[in-house]
Image: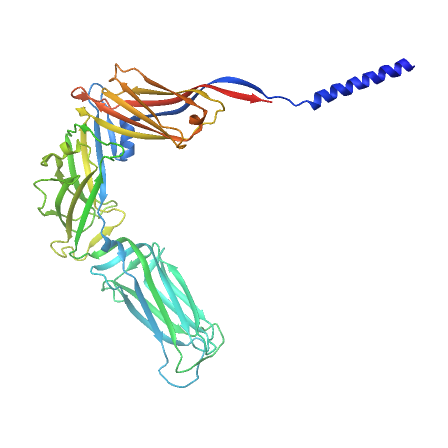
Length: 514
């Protein structure tokens, strides 16, 4: 029995020792090295990318065996007419004071103190407007009364309608204590308002018909006590009125215009020459105003270099647009840009930043020939319009393209390997490529590499490998690619060309598991 107890005690001590060893010892991390190949960037540039970045009006026609044709047909600038698109602010004030002294004078419920129909005249308008539609606008109103009794204001504008309903202000002010005025203020939204500007008579211009009634409300059984010193006043402030449509006679206004059309951004296209020989290039002016115009283009320049044309400085008569149908039929005037001297497109070949044109237009050069039937819809402004067609064929010399790609950084503990850049040239021209990888961590020096890519179809994938470690891979940075394109004489482009840039990292990093 004693031996058995001793044996059990020994077994218990052994279990306790094993448990202490199992739970008392700290576990060590297990670390091993893993191979990794991680894609970072896969980007490219094609003719389609260039067009989509420049305009929604561009396209490329591709015909097998022929040079692709780049087409642009669309607006390059709207011609704004401020005098037809915004009305000046107008304030209307009406004040009613008794025509007697002393008092009080009792005024029963339902009495009318003022009943007036009159025109509200918009000041500061040189045109003769008969009607318009507002896109936005409002009336800020303020009413006050010192009368010891309820006062009712009814201010109606029968010639201003929204959704077919006339705009009207109704306010009832409670009695004043004889010391302070009773007041109320607020706003009436005029967005979408249709306004007849022919006034109360229906034969005027720039006038809104109004009907103001001031009295005591008949539904409140209270007799107002009016003194000769009492005052009742209403103020209406028409403001921020922007026009969507307007009709009438627009007068003879000279409106200057200038257009700066960006062509090549120096940050993206720093230098070089690109042979540009379009088969069609017409600059059009599309008159969408139902009013005659006299247009005069005075100057055309490319990065400050003046370009001459037989039409420059010569007034051009453009008849009114036709709004008789559901859609406007604009009147077109155009100039042939292939007739410039020096050639506009020779200058464009040197990658200018901006093309500038300036001039002026005179509304209604012959006066009111329509009998007050001019019309303008702000949603359809007159436009300068370009109709352009260019077969993608010619010489390219030192044409530089710069692109920047942001990289967020990737954390891989203990990474050791290479940054791999692959450049695939799908253009029939030779490329020299310089790349710079700048890190946000300024303690890490920039990586600079160079590469060459032969003309397609003989070109192979150009690959550059740069050794990098954990810190460089983890740091956010920017990869800037500068590619210089040069052709061996004239070349044709199919329109399907594309340059592809792939960036990846390859190497090993450490993985630790407890």
